[in-house]
Amino acid sequence: MSSSDFSQADQGETRVGRANPDPIILRGQEAWARLRQELAWEDWLAVGEALRLGRHLAMLEARTNEPSGKRYQAIYGDWLRQNGFDEIDKGDRSRLFDCLENLSAIHGWRQTLPLNQRVRLNHPNSIWRNWQKSKTTVDTRPSPTAKYKDEIVRLEDENSRLRRAGDELFLPQDTATDIARLLADRLLRLTPSKARQILELLPELYAKRSAETPHDKARPRARSPEGQCRSAPYADDGEAPPCPQR
Image (cartoon, rainbow, N blue to C red; front, side, top):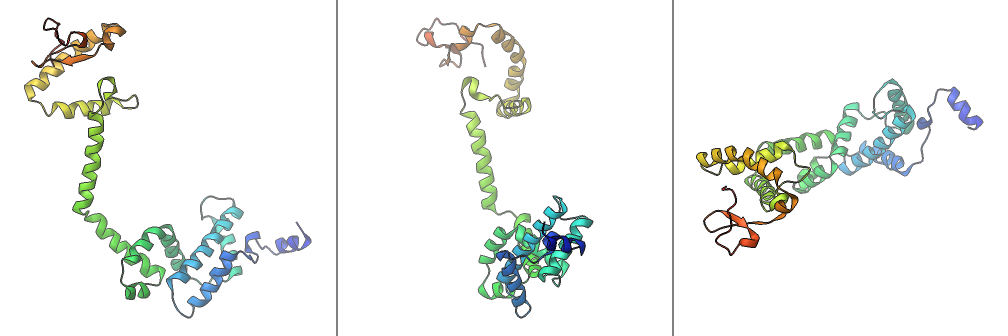
C-alpha cells in the first residue's frame, strides 16, 4: 500500500469509496446526469448496472454475501457519495434492483406495449408496478393453452413409463411411493373385483418368483389367446403350462 493509500485510510475512506474509472460506473454517472433533465428507461438501466457494480464492490469490501449490515451500509453509502449516486431515492434504487433481477421478463413485456406506453413508462417505479400488474393477471388466470400443455407433459411422462417392458417398468431411482402410485393408477382402470384379486395374488406370486432360479426368471413369457401366458419356447405348443392368471 502506498503512502497515499495510508493517508486515505487514516481519513476513514474505504477502498471502494475512491473514484473508480470503471466504464460501467462512468456510463451510469453520465446517464444519471441526463435523467435529471429527462427520464429515459435506457438511462435508468445504465444507472442500475453502475449501482449493482457498486453494491458488489461494497459487499466484497465488507466481506459479506448479503447487501446488509452496518459495515456494508457504511461502505456502500461512501461509494454512492463518492460516485454521485447518493441523490437517488433509496426506494427508487430498491425498485431499480428489482427490475434488474427480472430484466429479461420485463423486456419481453415491454415489447408487447404500444410505443406511446413504452415512452411513458420510463421510471423504475412505474415499470415495476405495471409489470407486476400484468404478471398477476397472467398467473391467476392460466390460459387454456397453458393447461393443455401441462396436461400433455403429464401424459407423456406417464406414457414413457407404460412403454417400459419387463424389469424396465421401474427404474432403480423410482421410490416405493412412485411405484405404488403407478400400480394404483393401473388398478383403478380395472373392475373392483379384479383389482382385489390382483392384490390377493401379489404376495403368493412374489414368493414364487423369489424362489425361481435366475434362468427361470430370464425366460420370456408370452400371453396366450385365452388371456393366459406361456413360456416363449412353448409358444406354439398347446400343452405348455400356463403362467399364473393376471
